[in-house]
Length: 174
Length: 256
Picture 1 (tube, each protein chain N blue to C red):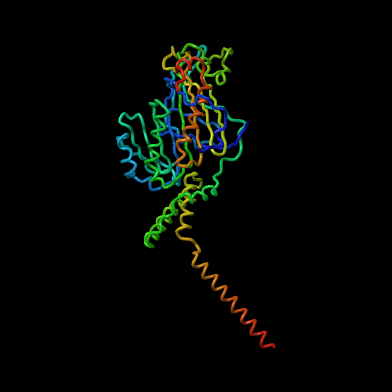
Picture 2: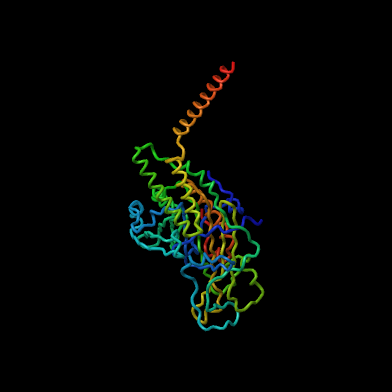
């Protein structure tokens, strides 16, 4: 019956016509997004019976007593798997590829700077960073296939030389 | 057919395509969040955005969001707003969000069509083939006649504690219910909305706000319509459960 806890956000209109004040501890961030409030301002009025508007006509919510726990965490692996769905840049000229690398790197740095400055960031920023990281890897991998091939050839040559040396030593003993 | 775990939060109405002749909707909004594109937060609105929506939304406005703290650069940025000719519909583009909202809601089919049209326009701009979150929210205000008990307008499941207790000076009554799975959920917020503007009206039965907000996470662009459909079914089912008999009579018969 009781499901996953944690904040999943709310759909926020540009100009919300209703303000729900969240009175749970540590939930002040929602207050900043509310702008206008419903409710006509009341005048000096003493309730006789039934319903009575107060001077403060905001709507408030009872404290949730049984929902606790960690907030929803963004799994970067989820987004890390996404980029294969992004279309990879076409095999364009080297110049365009370098320009794309510069553009991606620049956007990545700006987002990282914003992330560092803000401390906490949104899922949207983290998602974009994951996409850019994957794109950088595909555009400008740390180690290229040619480099790996060259290294393997060097290792193979070294192994061959070692065997030849051992063979010469064995012949000289004989 | 896309499916989410959150689709099974509760049993849905069989007549999911039904709608009422009238509605209590004061505001309806669809929020589409995507991986942040800093380039969309510049002062100049994207040409494709303006040109693609110009016919239906000829009014262009501009705003700038201020950060919550001096160090927070992620929330600051320019906001581009286009509105329909009578300003009934508003499309807002931020660096990580596009909003479709209205205060003159007529039908879900119209809302759905407008959202999908906006998705088609912004898809090339957001450089992503998925939304991190899609939200659909309806804020209803049940306008009572001021005379009959509140429990006839709003489900006793929400306001039943007032029945037979002869409370006086009821100033606040509100609640929140959140149902949630890892990929989506629904939030019901409800509470009194006082009519009072004069002393005479102070003791009349107040109106009641039913605010239902559904969402799905990590939705691919091509599944936007399906996500909207299932969220609307859930919201409609929950909304119907919140109604009292008088409210249902006012809204009229369910139409297919």
